[in-house]
Image 1: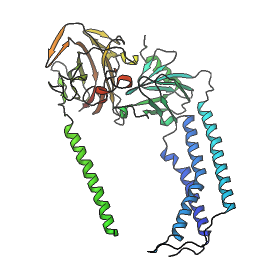
Image 2: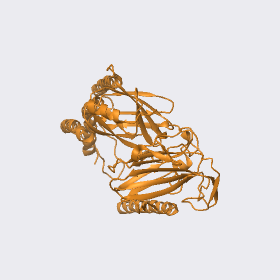
Image 3: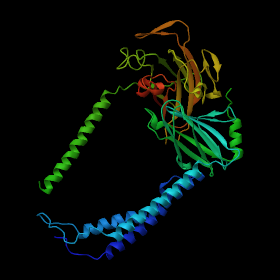
Image 4: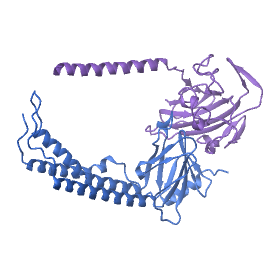
Length: 244
Length: 224
């Protein structure tokens, strides 16, 4: 049928509103189920960022979906011949254009400010006595050494509530050092040491995975780590063989 | 083209595409050499103990690839790829290391780790670590992600015994370094092992060729 008839936009607005509410609910509810358990301040911030960004994006996504549904409902031509030219095309709408540009600007500036703030928190270290752990990636195993000691290990053990500074490098190709539960991920590059800060704040185990495809046994480049109490960590460190 | 014809064409495309992929997979699997699994031999003198013996060579002429050396006779290789050991057992491993070597790119692997007592013997001498600048290969065994296993064993295999030559199959090699160690298996599962000495050549880090192809410097250890 020809689509020259004007329709009320009330249905569109209702659909937009409803989808926005659904989007906001999903944005707040889903990360708790989809994201790994938080074991550090970084991961807490990552989850919060995910929620805030999703909530901010919900009305935009809902608007696109609602407009698509509305147009498909009212403006699809189903005839067999060439469709006639529409008589009521809207070619310019200053209010819509300005509103859309303003909304986009506000949203992107907000995301930028939030992102820079989160980055600054992630990169910042403020403890006087952080634990420094040297992380080395090699096809296809992670190894860790603890600065100020002669301890080397293939597993990563960290104390609770103490800032940890990772010095990350690679011996062969580019690897990706990723601890999902701590919200940290960075490339391990040959000949370069990359610094990363975190503060574990929950006891338990976590996984360290390589996120850069690095060869035959890349899939096996996974090791487990553990966050212990300060006393437990000190005991573990003391029990490790000291490398000469 | 009418609707039913379009649907039939789409379905036929999917079926034919799937069949082509299956055929390619079958051809690939058929051409992959299937090596015999190396079994751990029960030790008649000690309860819950078995012995596992294998070798490392500077080529592929004396091990699992047969006398011709398979498609890459000049590639370094372990004599066996697939190994099988019993659960909850002490495994006595003997490795005959025939290859030359050089310096590790990560000295972490000069240590003996995960063995009983944290030691190994090299030609009868007990060691906890070896010279990192003279390594032939390493035998590094770890649990496969998601298997729940935490087994980790890594033993460096020194290079160059300087003890004359021996002939094995079509190859002539320097007399081997004999490395022995023991470890305990836990519950059933499949573990992955590989060499951590950069002996593969061709790529950055020397982890190409034999290091990047199954059947040479890596394999599995099945605990049954």
